[in-house]
Length: 444
Image 1 (spheres, rainbow, N blue to C red):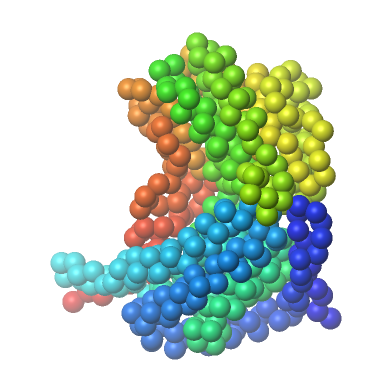
Image 2: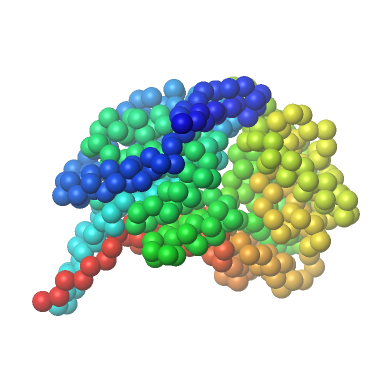
């Protein structure tokens, strides 16, 4: 019997809609259909594959308002941010497709030709916080390289994923892109199936489980597994710019972003002024539903995540942190903008990803100590340094795949890459796109 997967508005708990969960027994059949469709998809050629993706993306752009409303209702982010994500996908997917097409063009080397063949069927498993953007970053290079895709979106945001796939499938050949709905059980069954690669963005726990399951048949993996990103503020930093970034990065998408700033280390000589400015900026933020034009912090995706954030805040306060703003009296479905100072290594939020609208501040006197604290984590996705002449030197000492110097991470045409347990492989740019292909060397 096929179940129903219901999707709820995180701002009020009301039902947005539902889709049929994919029967576990059907997943093998879905993968088999994808395997059969892949042969013709490969023969079609990269130029025609990109052309179809471009045409589908034009329709996505023409329906941006409809898609943005659905994304907001289902995930909770405000309409402006949802519109930005939809438009980013509409214009970004063709860009990624063309970039991936260039990446897989044969290379002539002395005595050999290097070709980039499709792998076969790629499983794409994506998160709820950026339900279109994160999926497209993995799905489009996989399709462009000549693979077929079985897409498993988060069970928190199945409706927007379903709508996007329906638009693409107006243009793509049958079974080139298929969708699997469900929770952990469906995801595990997909990983266990005869796919050749798993492209995943999500939690570290899920990533470790995927690695174990993929090891039996040595499936290819590209995974981004979250972070606990530090920020170091040097004594000569532009205090106002650093404070604005600290708040904006910590509160973006209600803090539900893998590269949110989670730990801030500020030099003691400027700490009081920095904390006061952070508190002032943070006090302007307002929580509320997606359709309120004055809102810049939406709801938390579900009660489990909300409870974790509250537990992290309470743990910090119980262990001596000082509440500068918020931290209590959270309305149902929301976390009020919160600023904490005096955070130390005994507190949960120093070691775990809080994933909520919390600014967590610690003071340091010795720069080497601050660098050691920033690096003392199993994560290594992003990091940020604000300061003057020494900022670049500090940035080079931070153990992260992406480091921003007086700015956020991941700007421009750069790969999206995590270090340590935040990443396995990476995506974006020529080398990232090539991970969705098998290298073949033809020698004369």
